[in-house]
Amino acid sequence: MNSSSRRLLAGIVTTGLVAGLGVAGFAGPAQAWDTKPVRLVVGLKAGVDPGSSLSTLSGFGIKKLSGGSALDSALAEVQAKSLDVPASQKSSVIAALRNDPDVAYVEVDPTAKSFVVAPNDPVYTGGHQPELGQINVPAAWAATSGNAIKVAVVDTGVSPVGDLSGKVLKGYDFVNKDSNASDDGGFPHGTVVASLIASKTNNGAGLAGVCQQCQILPVKVLDYEGSGSYANVAAGIIYAAKQGAKIINLSLGGSDTSTTLQNAVAYANGRGALVVAAAGNEGTNQRMYPAAYGDVLAVGGTNTRTGGKERVSFSSYGASWVDVAAPAITAGMRNNGAYCWDGNTANCWDWYYNEYEVQGTSFSAPLVSGVAALVQSKHPSWSGWSVQRAIRNTTTPIGGWVERGLVNAQKAVAFTTADTVKPTSGIGIAKNTLVRGSRVIGAPGLKDNSGGSGIRNVDLYVNGKWHSWDYVSPFAPKLNTAGKNGALKVQLRITDKAGNVGWSPATSVVADNTPPKVTITKAPKNKAKVSGTVTVKVKATDKYKVAKVQLLVNGKVVATDTKAAYSLSFKVSKQKKTMKVVVRAYDKAGNVKKLATRTYYRR
Image 1 (cartoon, rainbow, N blue to C red):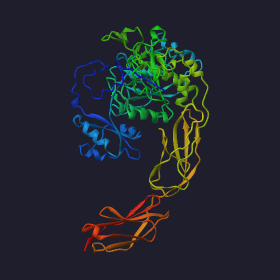
Image 2 (image 1 turned 90 degrees about the horizontal axis):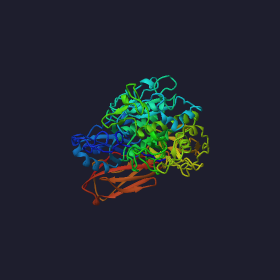
Image 3 (image 1 turned 45 degrees about the vertical axis):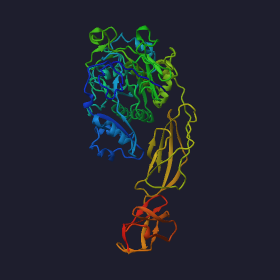
């Protein structure tokens, strides 16, 4: 899938630390950004523990990473960690980290903002929601009014007021680092978004939400002004996926891409969630993120005032990355329980910009998230990919500015064509292979036999129990044998994006984490004076055979023997006056045993 997003008063603006950027992307008074620390996100190579410290940072006096335990825990899922550095040290720290052998990438953490034309809080009052009819939501209700589908709103938070009372679950606030995810935005963006998705219906008050029975998982990643770091957004996506959200709504975005953000989306996809993102309010075809990432359902905006079939002027566009469209001028509910609709100047008029507040692709996206929740309710076993497939394949054509067309809720809910073909794969390790520590297990011949959805994730099972997974191509989960010895049965579980499951053949490997036993049977004693040729005889044994025995002098290998009995020698005349002599042995699995150092002196 492709996607896009929009800016103006709520866009993910990848300004980093650019001075003078105002709330809505308009120029504002210059600010002393250079006095603030710069947030970096560091991606770690496979096998590096995200909880470990980076020795590279010690030279800069940076001992503690930023973010707090929740952010650190979330980013660890995608092998990343964040840190704040003084602006004056940014370039030198980045350069040093890029030379660190444990580091895969370093990026300055951009800033995200919500996508609205003007900052506002929308809620709906009956009779003023033409947007629902324009995408056939009332007709879809004849088939389903929704179930208790968990929809995450990754935004400014959500306040459980009015039509959202009793519908908002306990979430998390990545801005203030606590579990109170209420909406404190100057423009209650998240509450408005949530109200469009899941407001109570047929209760004689307020507005009608698209999915009447849905639950909202609030994840606060944007601050009072509607902006936040990409790291927080990524952590919010990961948190939502781990909490079991089926749909993740992102009414935010920015023009900069980010490996961490992209990995977070892949993580959510790997867990079967559908990520829906606003295309943005740029009025151009510039790609916006996360909307433009693959497997994100990107939503552009149509003009509600003219029937909802033509692009509204501010909506970003591009058939190569914007998937579908939905009305962009909507009703909504503010975080104080007041309701907004187009033309209501009492609650919903921005007098500074002299326009109705609740307009933007920020509000197109939740309409689509609500439709996705209706489809999920009708087909609870479907994966996020199958849900988006139903939405994409039932749209009404509205022109080449969007890949598919205008969302049609009635047809999406009625869509029943499913991919039911199981994927297949081999297993990338030979029978009885000796394994120590960790190693990846590839999936040779990996194939989605339907030819449609593609592979979602590959899970590794050891002795019949889940062990690890990988959700990014080339799909090679890690086998960790630490503390294990003996035979292990390994098998891969392959899941395609439609949720079909296939299994690789099972095979057995041998975990060997025990080093060989080594003793010196004959050699000069420690601190001996030597001349001529020194010979060291060694006895080495191992359950799975010794691979080699080596003799090192002053840290350099001077002799290697691969056959018992092991005899190694060196000429004293070629060494320094003082010789530090070490014997080490390797077994077939690569375990090593090193004996205590002996010191010899040239006679």
